[in-house]
Image 1: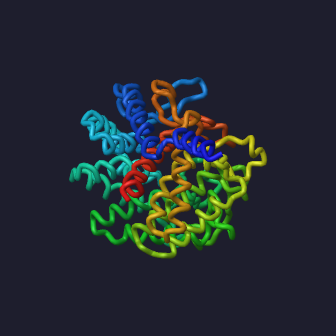
Image 2: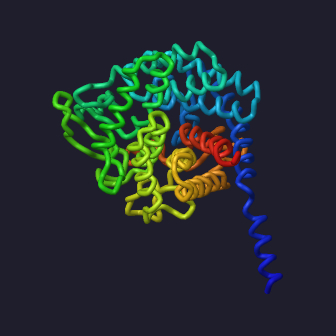
Image 3: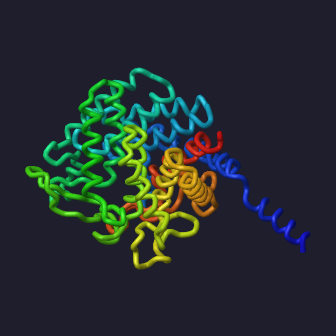
Length: 393
C-alpha cells in the first residue's frame, strides 16, 4: 500500500511539470510563432496583424484600429524575455507603424495603441524619443474627457450614436497611458482625468455583486446615467467575461499607480465575483459570458483568461498572504491551461499567433473562436509577471 502511494505520487509529479518549465516552453514557442507572424506583415507597410478571418486568411488592420498596439507590445515583451537583438529590431520597426496614433483624438483606445507599444519600448530601452509620443498620446486621449460626466468618452463610430456619451469598461485599461504621460510631462491634469474616470466608472458600472456592465451612457449636459447595458455580452444584465477581466486589471493598475485603497478593494471585489462564480470552470478559462445559458457548451474565451491571469499575478502583490495564495494559484492554473495543447498553437500553425480559442464579439458574429493579438499580449505579460513577481521569491 505504501509502495503504491509512493508510486502514485511520483507519477503525479512527473505528469504535472513545474510551472517554470511550462512558462519556459510557452515563451519559447511564443518567440518562434511571433517571428513567423512578423514575416507575414514585414513587407506590408503600416499593416498590423489582428486575427484569422472566417476564410482562414490572416486578418490585419491599419494603425487606427484599436488592437494595433498589441503586436508591437508583444514583440517588446518577447525581447525582454529573450534578449534577442532580432526581436528588438522587429519590435522597433513595428512600433513605428503606430506612431501616428499619438495624435488620434477620435479613439479612446489610443492607450492600447501607444502604451503597449511605445510604453514598453521606453520601459525597456529608455529611448527618450518615446516620451514625446507617450505624452502626445495622453493629451490626445484627454480631449475625450467631459468634466460634467467625469469620464472619457469611449466610442464615436456611427453605430454608437444610439448612446449620447458611451463609456465602456474597457476604457479602464487606457488610464495607464494618462498616468504615464502625467508622470513624464508633469501635467497633473492628465492624472486627475484618470482618477476621475476611474471613480465615475466605479460608481456607475458595477452591480451589487461587483459584476460589471459593458456600457454606461451618460447625458453629456447633466452627467446623469441614461442607460446601462452589455453590448458585447449575452444580454444587458449578463457578466461578459472580458469585461470582468478589464475591470479586474484596470482597478489593480489604478491601485498600483495611486495607492488609493478604494481601488484595491474594488479589484478584490471583482476578483471575488470571478472566483466564486458557479460558472467558472475548473481550468479557470472562463466561458465568453458567465451567464450564457448554453454553459457548459458555451465557447471559452482565452483572451479573458489571459487578462485575468496577468491581473491576478499583480493583485497578489498587494494583498495579505491568504488572498495572495488564492490569486497566484488561479493565475498559475490559467497559465497552465493556456499553455496546454488545447490553447497553445503548435509551431508553424495558427498563422503565427500564440493562442487559440478567443472570442471577440459573439453576438455580432465577429472574431468567434479565433486567435486575437490581445490574448497573446496578456498571456505573455502574465507569464513574465509570474516569472518576475512570483518565481523570484
